Amino acid sequence: MDLGAARGKGGDVARETEEARFLDTVQSQRDMRCVITDSQAIDVVSPLLMGNDIPHTTFSIVMANYLSGGALSTFVDGLEGLSQMASGERPKKVLISEACNHDRITSTCDDIGLVQLPKVLERLVPGVEFQHTFGRDDEFLSDDLSKEYGLVLHCGGCMLSPQQMRARIDVMESLGVPLTNYGVLLSYAKSAAALNEVIKPYDLELPSSML
Image 1: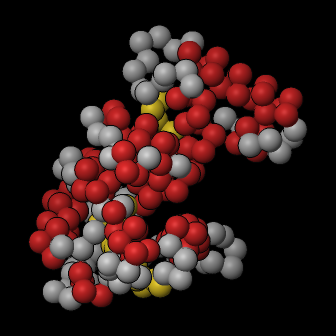
Image 2 (image 1 turned 180 degrees about the horizontal axis):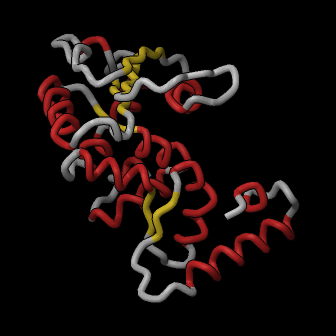
């Protein structure tokens, strides 16, 4: 899909043409059971697919469920940390945890952990503070985690094994700190309805209070 055209950058005719082309491509597939798209395209893709009753999810959601050993519901439930921070129930501070150590050149690109997601969180919870951890060691998993942070936002975990990811989840659950991940937050930031759709293939739904 040409996301620029689908977002209307070329005008209404170009947008409608691209939407029709995309739907025609999808609907022409035989025995298709689910569309998997990029999280950053969900604002365009999800409304089109929802309107045509086509099941869909994102690559990030697939990876989150796989690497967590099927604990996708933990990341969805962790979104409650957003409202708890906004209401003052929890500290208005987010720990953004990335398992990799790639070069982060924020002057030339919008790094997802350092630039994009902080902007999303600031929009959802104005005044929120951030701290980052990088790498595969677990030193950040201290007993004070729940007292210091209102939410832990974890990357997709592609540099971790399922066992390592599951171990991190178990520790954070035992400490009582809300936990979500990049893909879940990105879909939720587009709209609660979009997130609700991309978790349906896993037999999950958002509570009505979040829709």
